[in-house]
Length: 197
Image (cartoon, rainbow, N blue to C red; front, side, top):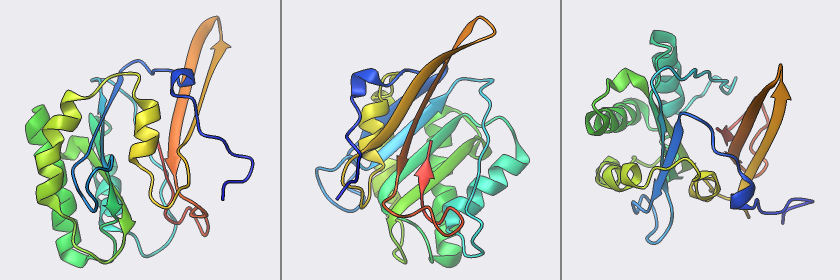
């Protein structure tokens, strides 16, 4: 049960220049559920990551860290819910890489320019075929004002979507900040399994 938390109003979430978001139903775990999200970033976007401090990290965490260490030129993120691709060993790493390869192929990018994220049930093999099949629909649905739908598309055990947006003036320029996150009691210890974008 949410405590002092209300669902965000999608119209109040500010678009961010250079960011388009697409969401679709790929059937990762259940039918008729928004479960595949892509963030498409314009060339020149700055990307940084903060990761769990736990020694046991899921395959997507390892691949994200590897890609960010190799290049600052991240152009897309792919997020699935329903399956965490955690505790899946070498197969999990291969599946996370295959997801990056597929989105890179769709976008005409390099696999290293993609960051993968997965959330959901652990110790089950990622259904890469369903994710790959859903990518064209997610890409086609991409638009700047999709933050509200994306907040729904990354939920797992959350009782409602989580999002925040603010616009401030700094040095005479208007700066917009928008973010979404998923996770119910998942930030401890050491950022555990929370995802935030």
